[in-house]
Length: 375
Ligand SMILES: Nc1ncnc2c1ncn2[C@@H]1O[C@H](COP(=O)(O)OP(=O)(O)OP(=O)(O)O)[C@@H](O)[C@H]1O
Ligand SMILES: [Mg+2]
Image (tube, rainbow, N blue to C red; front, side):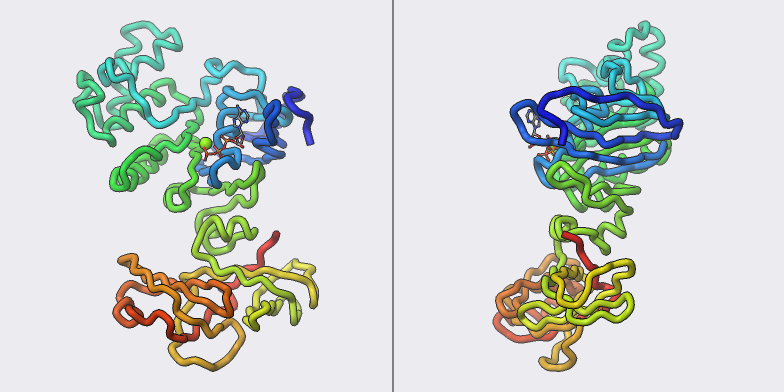
């Protein structure tokens, strides 16, 4: 582990296209390790979301890329060139913006021009380029308005234009949709994603919102406690969590913790203390009979089989604890010998479960829906 506060970053060169974080580490003086040994490659034009619980090191990672924080060790390369010793304003390729805050006393055009003014661009050029950026986000008609006379979504687009005007290679976005009401958030997800596709720019977006990450990213990087736990496309993150942390953080996963009781080729059978037995395909795993193991099964992959009794593998007899109606879905909170389990069934089935708390049901799932977890 790197020593506290010691700046030992060594620039290097790889000749690779895109952004590379190489063993990136940040230890705050007197504080803990905020980012530990982070390795990540992001391609040009890629939309990558850094996702993780509060305090896991997302903002610190972004601030190091933007030049607002100096790494304790490791390197940050853009197209093979190290950015570590470059001043933030000299990193024309990356720009950070947070919470889309606009200057209230400046017009839309003046807000957008501000970024260029900071770069020492002349008046005429500033005006022309800013109007072009406003056109990109579809707001050239509103250039003379003040921010207070814009909707939340329009304000965000102005803030985007203000960043785009400096023609960055990569955009760094820290919780960009965090302050918005839910409907606007949903709309801005689509707008931001569309804009990113149109522009073909690299976006690095930080959030602690799972749904936002799943709906926007080409790839998701799940962090916890300063480290990367998994890097994968949204479908893989949602259906094949690599670690217990990812399974828990993504939510709505049943985690069956027990011991391996059978092993046949690449197939393992894990049994927990309550007799729940789950089979899972785990190629390349060395786990043998008698060893502890953990398996995740998504709540959405769990089916309700009304009859109690029946086969025991990939199935469990449960008691309904609580029936939660979520519109499109019904979440059944279940218990198996004191262990909580979840099943998500289509909303149409709500009438058949309403008021059935305390009743016994059987649930089952397919072997393919089991996922062996690492600690
Ligand atoms: N300037 C600082 N000095 C000391 N510790 C810091 C400093 N900035 C951040 N930290 C610590 O580093 C860790 C990571 O912080 P960071 O802001 O990167 O988290 P985050 O993932 O962005 O969290 P959130 O989702 O709450 O914004 C936290 O434990 C935080 O307290
Ligand atoms: Mg943060």
